[in-house]
Every structure is written in structure tokens, then in C-alpha cells.
Image (cartoon, rainbow over all chains, first blue to last red; front, side, top):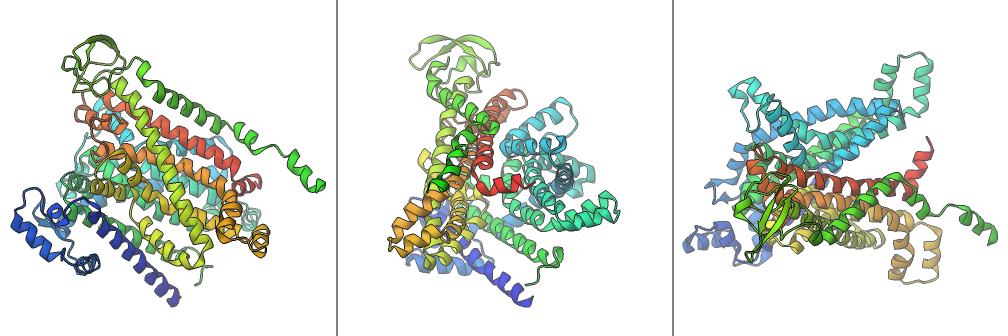
Length: 313
Length: 304
């Protein structure tokens, strides 16, 4: 067990290293002088010379990477010329809305998709099953921003039920906070629901063919108990796995959703930074999201030990 | 020989099985329509999609009037979908936008299948390359695809080629993984062992014995890559980091329309409907192909 933990933790290192190399190389792909790119449009020659020196741009590429890598290991993601702030501080400021949106979305998606998937598997081939499969193809196809605008149009503009756009911090009152997050979370949850429901349905219907289900039924267990305690519990590993993998989808969707709903989170920061060609911020946000993604999936892997006692490494 | 051959001839051919699948039929039908629209856009009551006519700014869908071209000629024109805030005809922009979406979808699929296929073949067959190649792919997969694409486009500068490259790169690891796992199972097949025993060179084994047996799952994967590429391209344009805004892409039309979405929602909704329909068609084609082409999926399906 301990050996597995250590091995799994060590496996994260090469992944994160490759991420760092890719993020480092992205800036070097830009035509022109990286120092000038980092310094921004309003920089003086002196600024550029300073950056050039601090990044070691006169040194070979490998040493440049070394300097940069050492900096990020100490938590220094560079400096945004556009916001005139350290990148880590910027990320800290913008984290809350993104985290809340992601949390709402995941909770909503799991609450909707898992019961639907179980029911679809239970009545395999029934109307709910076919409806859910049709919905999931649709959910994969409808672009997040199109759905977002349709929802704003119907719910906010026509029916006047919820605020159109924006974000309120939880300190500004509970209802304003929640009401501003409902539509973005629903928008973002649709593709996630499609994904999780599909996997839940497949995993549960596979579990339902097992002998222990027949045993459970024949000893007279109520069907709900059979479904939840026996079928769903045995289908937990693939479901949790897809929730973890789906985080990548969620992060991509966050960037778009925040733009549609004017939520001042990390996604909007990314877009603004790209438009301003503020590369340290772009690099920092990508690093942040990738590390978060890798760590969440590490947790998912470790959760197998709890979810499936048969797994003993 | 005759005994072995007979079941094959009795089996319905794969193509006829594919052609009888409804998901494939609908997908192909809609896509054929879209290809026709993309090709015939100039003759479908359109004007130059880049020309702005200040006199028709924000006219509503269904308006019928005149459109002034660049050379000052005024032509009679039906504004089926209205005009945007610069006075560009949305019907024309949406139809011409079909071209960009289809081209990007097709080329991203081709590029990522080719590169991912090659690296997957190498990783699966050349064991010394496997470890390092797959670690690189794991790392690439850890970066959320849209973010990587956004960063690549902004670093490379936006053009049709760089957009295709930027969208294809995040797709490559998934294709590599798929092909690698296929190769790992195919290389254990007796016919590959026989070829090895006969002294066939490695590249020939890879191209003649392994690749043909991985084609069907690759095609299925290709359709899903295509659908996601069309989506990502429109997202890049929508966020303003994709192709330059004067180029008519569905994402660009929506990016322009979102500013005054409250008053003129159709600027966003029309291209949105086209985009959703296109992605849906490609996904349905992919689902149908997977059900009919992928033997593993079939076995599971018929077991129930």
C-alpha cells in the first residue's frame, strides 16, 4: 500500500515536468524577442534589458529553462506588466469566482447525472434510457456559449427570473451570490452531465449483469437497495474516474462560461491576458490549471482504495 | 481454404452495415448538406461577407432592401438573418463561415490522426521509445486542451494554419494512446508473429500488418476529433483569440453579436444553430461508425 502511494506520487513528477517544459516553450514560440514580449508594449529599452538579464535570455535555452523552473518551484510565476502585479497574486485574486463556479457545476452535475444514469441502466432500452442517450449526444454537441446565450435569453431576458450577468461574492448576501451562479453552473454542467450519465449508465448496467445482483434480488432486497448498495457501489470506480477526467473539460468550459456571464475569474483573466499579450499571466494560469488537474486526478486514483476494497496495491 | 472463406462471404459487408445505421445516415445527410452550402455559398443569395454597408446596420431578419457593394453598386438583397452592427449581411457570413468550420474540422482530424497515429505506432512497436513518448503525452494531456490551444494561437499568431496546428496538438495525445493500445494488442496476433519470423522489416510490419488493423477505430476517433475541433475553433474565435474578426467564422459572428445580444439575439443564435447542428451531425456520424465498425463495442452490445 505504502509502496503504491509512493509510486503514484512519484508518477506525478514527470507529468508536471513535461507540463512545465511545454508552458516554457510556448513563450519561445512567439516570433521576436521574448523579453520584449514579456515587457509589453509600453516598456522602455531599459525594462527590456532588465528582463533579458533576469531571465538569462543571453544564455543557452537549457539554462534559461533552469532559471525559469527554479523560479516557479519557489512559487514565483513572474510579473504581469499589464496589471503590474505578481502573477501569483493575480491568480489568488481571481480564484474565488472560478472555484465557486466549478464547485456548483460539479455538485449539480453529479446530483443530476448519477441518478439519471442509474435509472437508465435499470430500465435498459426504455424511454428514459433512449432519451438520456439522445440528450448526451446533444449535450456533447451544443457549444457552451450558445447554450449560455439561449439560457440568458429565455430565463433572464424573457422570463426575468435571474440576473443576466456578473458575479457577487458570498459576502454580498447569499441569494445574490447563488442567483448569479445558477445559470453559469447549469450551462457548464450540461456537457459534464452528458459525460457522467453515459459512464454511469454503462458501468451500472455492467454491474447489473453480475451474479451478486441476482443473489441480492432473490434474497428479497428492495430494488432501491439493490441499485444503490450493490450496483452503484460496484460501478463507483469508473464514475469517479470520469468525474476526474472531466475536470479538463470543466476547466475549458470555465474559460468560455466566464466570458459569456462576465464572471471575473481565472477564465476571464486568461482571455484578457491573451488579448493583452500578457504572457507571464497566460503561462501562470495554464500551469495553475494543469497542476490542479493533475492533483485532482491523483486524489481520484487514491480514492479507489476506499471505493473498491478489492484494489490492494 | 474454401471452408474458411465461406463465412466471410456470407457476412454482410461492413459498408452495408454502416450504410444501414440511422445515426450514420442522418450525420452524413446533414454533413453533405453543409458541404454543399460551403461550396455553393456564392450562389445562394449572398453578398461579399466582409463588406460593410452603413445603411443597413442592425436591420432585422427578413428585411428586404438594397446592399451597397464595395464598388458602390447597390444590389437588391434579402436579409434573411438581418445584418450586424457593422452592416454586414449575417446570412452571407453564416454561409461562408461553414467553409472555415468544415476546413478546420477536417484538417485538425487529418493532422492529429497522422501525427498521433505515427507516434502511437512508434510507442506501441518500438519499446525503447515507449516510456519517454508516453510520459510526454501524459504531460500534454494534463494541460486542458482549450487553454493549450489558446496559448498556442496567441504565441504563433492567428492564421488558418496556426489555428489548425494549435487545435490539433492537444488532440494528439489521445490519438497516440488509442493507437498504442491497439498496436499492443495487434502485435500479439499470430500473423504479426509470422511476419516477424519471416524476417519482414519492422517498418513493413508496422505499415502493412499493424496499421490496416487499426484503421477502423482511428476513423471513429477522427470523427470525434473533428467535432471537437469545430467546437474549439468557434470558441477561439468567440473569445477573440482565433482567426481575425473580419474573416467570417461562426465564432467571430457570435463574438460580434454578443455585444448587443440583449437587443439583437439573432446575431448570436443563427450561427449558434449552425454550429450546434454541424457538431451534432459529426458526433452522430461518429457514434454510428463506432457502433458498426468497432468490433469490441459490438460484442459488448450483443452480449446484453
